[in-house]
Image (cartoon, rainbow, N blue to C red; front, side, top):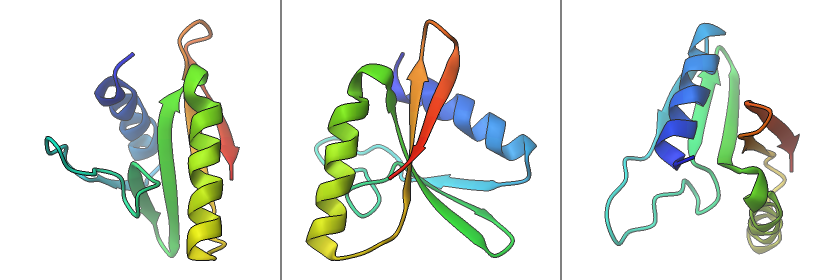
Length: 96
């Protein structure tokens, strides 16, 4: 499944729960990730979350990317990892 399709599912799910979603628009030949690690930022009241979207097969690579971000920036900002499982038709969610 393409990232745009996955993002559409996430935005739909989160919007129904009252979250405001923002993601960087895709620009060819440019980094599109927020802080180089997240695909979207969501906001609800005083809560703010960073989310990285991927497929189940890419979870390992994204975990590594998030760990490297934390090490490089010395930050402790949690990044949620949402992996789309096409067989189960649901997301596997982790906090890294």
